[in-house]
Structures are given as structure tokens and as C-alpha cells.
Amino acid sequence: MRRKLLPVLLGVFLALGCGLMTQAAPSLKLGQPIDCQLGENCFVLIYPDRDPGPEATDVGCGRMTYDGHKGTDFAIPDERVMAQGVAVKAAAAGTVLRVRNDIADQRIKDPTETSGVEGIECGNGVVIDHGQEWETQYCHLREGSVGVQPGEKVAEGSVLGLVGTSGKASFPHVHLSVRYQGQVVDPYVGPNAKPGCQTSKQPLWKTDLPYQPTGLIRAGFAPQLPELDQLWSGDFSDSNLVANSPAVVFWVQSFGVLEGDQERVKLLNPTGEVAANLERSLPNDQRVWVSSIGKKNTSTALTIGQWIGKYQLLRDNQVLVDVEKTLRVE
Ligand SMILES: [Zn+2]
Image (cartoon, rainbow, N blue to C red):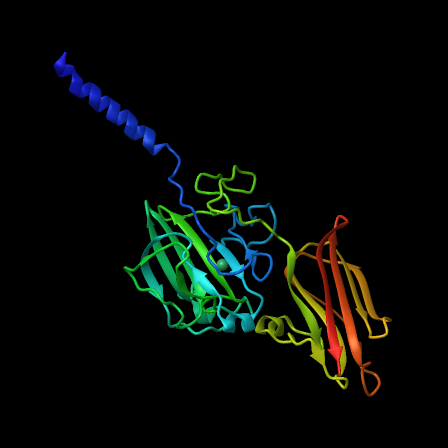
């Protein structure tokens, strides 16, 4: 009887071993990798691409991604906010594997012109080993802001550096990549999900990060039609305008608009009259969208006092963006 014990035990071990191999991956729990209020002063603009082929789909079967995007892009409103310093934080405890800290912050204005960042697409970055074959990577940090070293242990929430625009970044953001056994994992679904967006979802986030594919980035006034580049720079954030400005323009920068969305934009002068008015259906999908209306200064001076800009974005009669801003003309 005793002689039989060893082969029996071996058999049990083999069975256990095989059982483990087919089990689900151990899961890593992640905190938000950026110090901001999601939906208030930061936004997920690009989700991981869940389509295995040449198409692209995000976790919500929406279009806030592009083919082959391997991470989640947490964006901040503009480079003025970036200059104030927004912390990038370790999403989980671990050991720093690699860092890079000497790439200039040069926001890419033409997304097709990326020759200057070949091989350094991540820009200034940090890679953290979380054990059990899990890694996270943080990209596009501000030049010189990375404050951790390889080999250093970090806690969840430890500050790694600041949000920047280094590497292949066309707006200020931190790109978070999550990997298990070297494979990209979408943190909105976890490691055991099937490709595509119709899959079971076991998010890695410790507290649920909502999927918000449409929203407001910022809104304001300008003395001219604003370019998107100027908005990312942080221009036109004043709430005053001088009376001899060439025009008064109310602008709204939003994300995730779809073809057929309805826009209602209105500019009211200090006497409450409608100075400009626009209602339209949007012609196509846009990941970032700037809407503006204005009034040219045809006399010597704009009416002094408080101007009001009102904007609504509607889809299927549901209001997705609703903003009102005031301006002092003096
Ligand atoms: Zn990205």
C-alpha cells in the first residue's frame, strides 16, 4: 500500500498544476493614475482599442480610441493647467523598473507628423513591476518631472512625476498601459476578457471609473475664432474682453461628439438680446470638437457689460453637455 502513495500524490500535484494553468489570471487592483477629478478637470479621451483587427472600438462599443491604442489616455484641459503641475501617481504598489526624464514637452500639432518622436513615443515615462507578472507604464510626463528611480519601491498613489506632452502626445495627458505576462490588458475589462466590446467585464479599477465617451473640456470667450491648438495651449481663459476687441466669440471645446448630435449655441449681449445664435446637427464624429459663435465689432466698441454664452449638446433628446459662461466687456 505504501508504495502506491508516491504515484498517487504525484498524480494529485499534476492535476493541481494543470488546474492552475487554466485558472483566471491573478488580478491587480488599480487606483486612478492622475491627481484630478475625472469628468470635472480631467477626462479619458482615448481608451484601449478592443478590436483585434484594423477597426477600433472602445470598451463601451464607442469611438473614443484608434486602431492599436494600447492604453488609457487621461487628459487635462490645457497647458496652463499642465504648467501648474498635475501629479501622475502609481496605480498600485510595486518596484520601479525603468524611467526616462529628458524628453522635451513638444505637443504634436499634426498627428501625421511624428517623425521627431520615433523610438521615444512614450516620452518621459515610468514602468512599474507589481509582481506576479503585472506591469504598468506611464507616458508623456513633463520633462524633468520624474522623481523616482529604477529599483525604488513605490506605494499606490506615490507621485511619479507630472503630466506633460513629451513623446507622441497631441494634448496634455498621461497614457497608462497595463500588462500581464507582457500582454496588454484593458483595465476596464480585466485580463480574462475576450476581444471586442461585447465581453464580460471585470475592471481592475479599485473604485469604478465611469465610461464617459462625451463631455465638456472647457468653454470661454475670445476676441477671434479660436484654433484648437490655441485652446490646448490654454489661450482665451480670461473672462474679460476690452470693448474695442475685433469681435466677441463664445467657444466650447468638447469631446466625443457623434454625427447627428444636436448643438444649440447662443450669445446674449448685456441688454439680453441674442447677438448670435446657432442650431445645427453635427456632420460627423469627432473625438475633440470646438464649436464657436460670435459677433463682429462693427462699431467702435462692443456693448459694455456682462455677455452670456449658452451651449447644449443633445443626442436622442438627452442633454450631454450643458454649459453657460459669462464675460465682462469693459
Ligand atoms: Zn495613449
